[in-house]
Length: 213
Image 1 (spheres, one colour):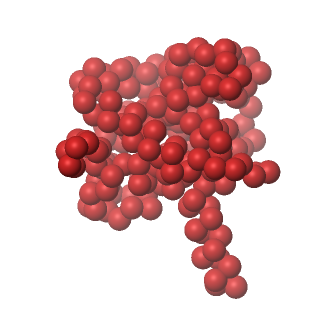
Image 2 (cartoon, helix red, strand yellow):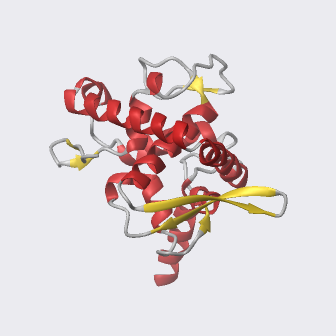
């Protein structure tokens, strides 16, 4: 899958951000104010967990397709876990989620939720606020309406949607496991939300910088 470059600074658009721009193609509607998520003025509300599953799923599907990671389902005691192995450095294009996956050493098999929770925002509803956090970190000065109407972005969205559907259909056990790993990551970061969204990795890096000073 080709990389799409956008904006005057030639910034790259991540799969996660594409999902958020076109939620009608990736998530189920949920009008509930408590359980639904809405990120842009033109959008309806979509199920918060469904949004998070699609954000993570689309990113992982492309990373597997491009050969950056491997995923496998392993049974541990009475439950199954999705184990991911990073084979090489994940490009900055993959934004927030790429940052979390890159924090795990290459060729070190790791439970997927252990990498995801590092970049999930601390919140009472992490699944829904994951989208908000990604938009804050990745959208920057780009205008979402212009991105949605860009033919190249629409073309990329269609490819990403097809890739995710193919991944789900071809790997039902992995897909079910990925959703459970997202649930686990959400449980690990569920907490009191501050004035600004932050992730465990943000906190770790802040402490590291304080130590240097």
